Image (cartoon, rainbow, N blue to C red; front, side, top):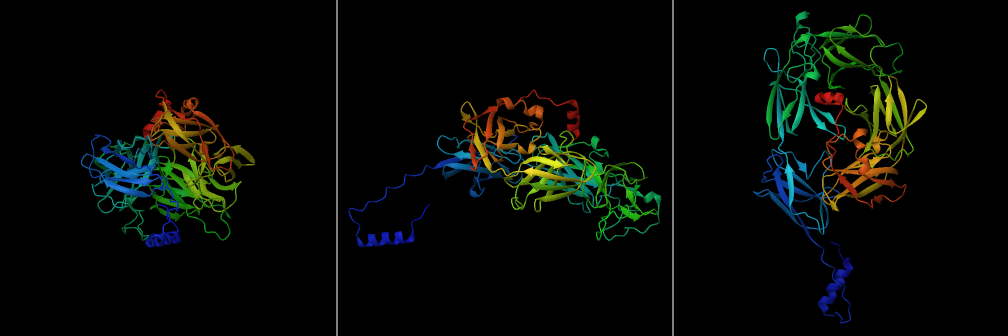
Amino acid sequence: MSQKPFFALVAACLLTSAGACSQDTVQPAPAPPQAIYRIAGTVVDSVSEQPISRVTVAILSTPGGHTLKTALTEADGHFAFSGLRAGKYSLTASKIGYRPAYFDQHEQYNSAIVAGEGQETEDLTFPITASAALRIAVTDDFGEPVEKAQIYLFHRVHSNGMGEQLTPWKLPPTKGTGEGAVYLLEPGDYYVAVSAHPWYALNNITESGTPPVAHPANPALDVAYPTTYFDGVTNEAEATAVTLAPGSRERIAITLHAVPAVRVTLPAPPAGAGAEGQVERPPELLPIIFGAPMEQPDRSTMEESERGGTEITGVAPGAYEVREGERRRRVLLNLSHSQDLSSNAGSGAAALKVTIKGIAKNALPADARLFLFWGDKTHPRQPMQAKFENNECEFGIVPPGNWELFIGAGMSGFPIIATSFDGQMHTGNRLHVMGKPLDVELSVRTAPTVVDGFAMREGKGKAGVLVLLVPHDPENHTDLIRRDQSDSDGSFTSRAVPPGAYTVVAIENGWNLEWQRPEILARYLPGGVVVSVPDQPEPLYHLTAAVPIQAPITSVTSEPEHQEVRQVR
């Protein structure tokens, strides 16, 4: 509410007290009353569709996300917020035993409720999902609990239009009970992997740096636990997924079996390999789980070998990544027996240095990072990231292959127009990494334009629709694709859009589509709206034509090889 200046209030009081208000005084016309609206609905269980009482529902400002009011649902699950001005509002719901959620949430997107003339906002259905919990008990050959076991949890989810991906969690090491637990889990399929060392092993080193038991070099104690997956297998391809239903509380047990340990000998680095005055990093041996090296303390023993290299003992058979030297040479191993590595073993890794050109050094926000996403969508890896300093960043080790580059900085957009390396410029944000150090220059530009519009069917907007702003060449410019979710009136907003030609598509129930696959995306482009975003100083570009909502095309099938990979990944 606006306020009058202080001196005007004083003058009004004096005139009123003296009765000196003239008949000729013109009084300002009162402002018309502002329309007041209401948002109401029912919170229900996403499975049973039964109403849920005593759920805390909050209404938030949009944009800003500030909580304006809260309410507890009644016995029939009903909630209501009155006295609202016209505008957009977000709703959240929370209750013990349920996953906190935004209204109509998909991944990090949700639909705002638009209050205003002609908007239907008083009969909302807000489904929330009961959370799941998983407890993992780790025991040894003797049925005893394993302490300090490292448990990894991998959730199989559809993410960012790339198909099924594995999202990892690293649990705290187990304590004396040998158990780990995770609560508030989203229902779905999970893979569990456990890494540990036998407490009695010959080469098991404690935190103090000494063996836990003083015993002679007994070959029977030269043992290790291989990485073990549920249900009791050591090959990730044979791992069994744990399916958690909404509200379920599951407990599984994984038994670790000690096997003879193996030894790996790394050659001595060549003379003068390290920079002057720089301490050579010790080698690292990292277990590979579902295609990615796990960053964890290595409790095997490293000693200098008789030939001047490094000997690593007490290693369990399995897949590993070896990192050594200042250039962080990368060696992939599938250890089944002891072996000596040659100086040229494995695949050399790229020490990647990236420089941005085209913008001032102070143009990047302080939180700007470069993300590397593995280009093979059917064999996903975890993304890599590095923070920019003065428009530069470095990666110590990048596995060979095709990568897609993205610059992330909050809501700011810095699309990559081209990459330059090995004396050549390449259009787009793709980078092919070989086994050698690489200096890369990125040609980027700021993208201040916000594109908004409406997704509609038969003249009516719909909430929860997937909206994609697709560039002219999406295969080489994946970082230019913009995604949003329509609000209750069908409106959507795509931020940080650079100038260029695009097609806007709206897909109902499209959140599980693998739209990053060109053959799938191509099926929806003919039904979209073509738009050319101009190079203009104005920050907002409004689409004059509504984007028609398309139904998902169910005839799309994956190749047999892709289906086979998805069963594991």
